[in-house]
Length: 621
Ligand code: HEM
Ligand SMILES: [Cu+2]
Image 1 (cartoon, rainbow, N blue to C red):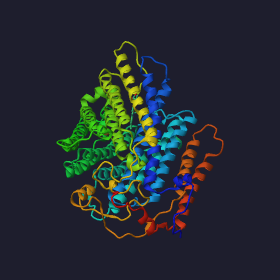
Image 2: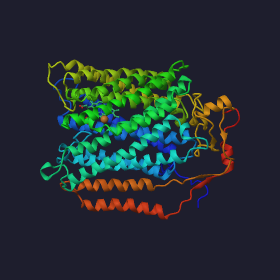
Image 3: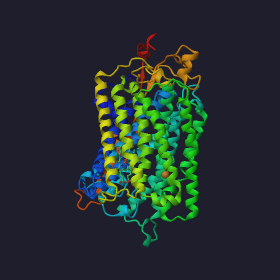
Image 4: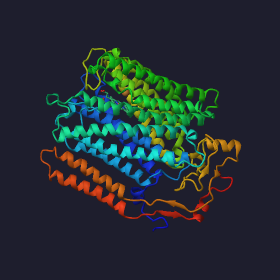
């Protein structure tokens, strides 16, 4: 039994870490890289659409780019970026020393990454998938290796997402500090909790659907072949039973971030906390009732269409509650418009616009006009970029000092906001009009003289503004690493929630003593009713910590090879027998699992004198 922490090189330390804070940073880095990759594809697509009959990209490449752009943005950029904040801040916000299962947390990260890399491997084997991120059959059952990478890449990365979600659920149920009742949880924790529940119920049908598609493609099953008694529409149902909740999986934690940033910089408690919690639950529940609004035009008939139309429109009610609560939080507040608050407050009108076009799309008869046009592209980018991405940027600027011990530069940040916000509306607002004029989505070019030229040009110019904004963010990150304002105090924003009660930099064990929670917004409560510091709920004692482990990385490498081996079954001339790769991959994965089960690992203890040494000194807060 190792009683003290083992010394490791920096690289080994990160490869084997089970610390939720380091994993949060790794999610942030991986998500950012995937975001840049998918963003670059978006820029290329927009350059292709800049002029009529442009030949910058071929039709085939364009199809691969729409598929990879959408798939990567949703599964490998937005999800891990939100997971980055969930990993880092859920334990801190509930007063815990880590998530419930630190090992599983690391495993979730590495499996997600290996699935993402498996999907990206398609570029080296004849090109990416090209059937859209929705992979509708029979388009997706044709012979193209890229789609096999889609099926298995998502299957593997989905396992990672699922186990991480389970881990968050257990953490929030079990690891709360004394006094942190459910109705005192910060809204970000609540929304993460509900979003994790959605993952549990939505990623399972996705896994089933992908398994069917894999059987169909690699093992010649006939689920989707009408002549053999199969059914093509069933894929759309399975996909959207996952796909619609997926947008809530992403947007609910984004709501959570907004609900943290707006109170902090309005200097007021969140208006209507209880209503916010229940609105989140209702949205999540209704989110499972509306999937067929993506299928109004497949011919389900007027009754089904009406039911799904009405169900969809009811979601506007709890969402409206949230919008008004954010507005009332700002109302009469002492607002600081720093970069985080600029992003958070501008989220509100932008997201409303996306919501309004959502209700428009929910009118089934009119959807026959909008369906598969740029109107849809405009709608979901208002939700995804105007909602999720703006919230991510707000969260980045807000939480950056806690994660990296310095602030991001405000001047550069505001310029980034201006460029990105203008660029966003230029790019996507005009796409509503393009859609109403009948420009279809997922088509790589259009003819001259149909009135589409100028609008497409404007849309592409908007993309350049956004790109310039993101480049400025990169400059900001590099500049601030060297010259940014250093943060040594625990609470640089004079904020309300518990993550600002731990010292900066955050010690490995987060809380030297588990805090006693006396209210919602616990830190703010202590500032008003106490001496501004959290009261300990336990005496100082040795802290038991888990050891790092290389096994999560190895297990996920095994899964990569299982997926890759299955894809090799479809290759014309695979170098070695694919089954060797599949079985080899399983051997690595299960072998490591066996090692994990058999080998005893009791972790280590942080000694009392070290904890005392690291306690913030009086007056330092
Ligand atoms: C930030 C700048 C972005 C630009 C300029 C952009 C541009 C585009 C373009 C040109 C398309 C193809 C539209 C079509 O022909 O149907 C598209 C599709 C899509 N985008 Fe974006 N996008 C951006 C950000 C995002 C983000 C952040 C996400 C998600 C997190 C996202 C998710 C999607 C999805 C799901 C599709 C559908 C792909 C498909 O039709 O299969 N996009 N985007
Ligand atoms: Cu939907």
